Length: 444
Image 1 (cartoon, rainbow, N blue to C red):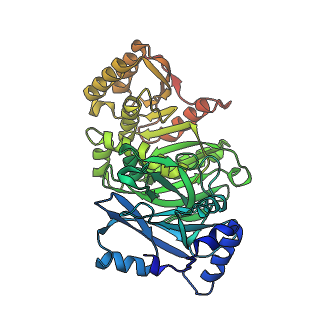
Image 2 (image 1 turned 90 degrees about the horizontal axis):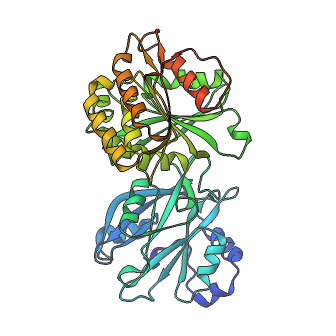
Image 3 (image 1 turned 180 degrees about the vertical axis):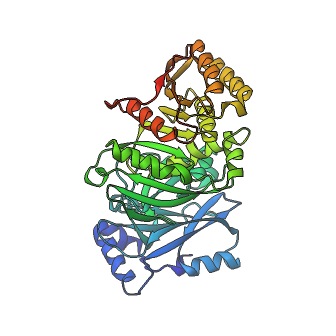
């Protein structure tokens, strides 16, 4: 693979003698001699015998590995992208190679000038190329709009040689941690920000809406996403409260307008349901459990690596069948891993799986009486109030420690009650002074 590099600096003694900035500038000049597309795709390979991973955007590398000219490697099917040109504050993704662990060898990608300089001083590693250009994440591991987090995981030298895996997929990150690999970087183990696979940004009169998508390994589905950024988002640097709302197709625009109308500063993430039949898979058991893991293990890390969200102020919102999913999510939270602080289950279809919910409630309580969350259970007289009330009463009788629960009743209709109840719930969650439309029901 060393023969195919785009910018080769084989003399280790020369490399070690140079300052990192001079090194990067030299390689940048070499890259600039050949016009390139603005984005390069890094293709990942795996060496089964070594359990090593390697990614490259260089065609000679890819051809050599695909053809077996360099034996033992096969594609994993994973890729990530890097920029091919340096603009603004982008830094070089510098590639190093080592044979100091023979018969194995290894590559390493440094993603900052300081890190590249440190590796360059190590005689066991030789600089090979600037593989592309990346953005620097914030100290919390978040990325600017249009970019996603690049995670780096370290094998700890297992098998006799060091190796790192680079991925933008939160599910892969969790899988590798489960196999004993250690995340490196800031935040959740983020070393760089790289181009998102696909996203588009549309300005609204107030705030912005970002359109994107995500494919879930938990459910096997691709979900369309719309992310609303509040008006002040671009003018500030702080973290914002974030609301994850299911049923994007029918709810997103209405909920976004409600946030604007009430001047609520929060990020809103709308998640598509794809088809009506799919709602009965994702929002009811047994599919609700993998869907919950999609939300917490895949969607949240993906969104919050791109946008400045406050992990202590996450809300999950659903209506009708997705309101049932909100209730499942409440009980699927673990005492040691709680992802949402607030739950809005609007006119939830409790009647569909009331017994399953009660069983899960019992299991949750058996694990721990602690349930630090805010639960809003608005329901309509002409909708699902009759099935919501008994569950509300049973939850009150549990006396969960830390659970703040409110039920409002409405007489607006099953669908029309969604937005007024959302506004009522948000006013409670954000402690905003606004008249409540619903009538509070003690459900005792």
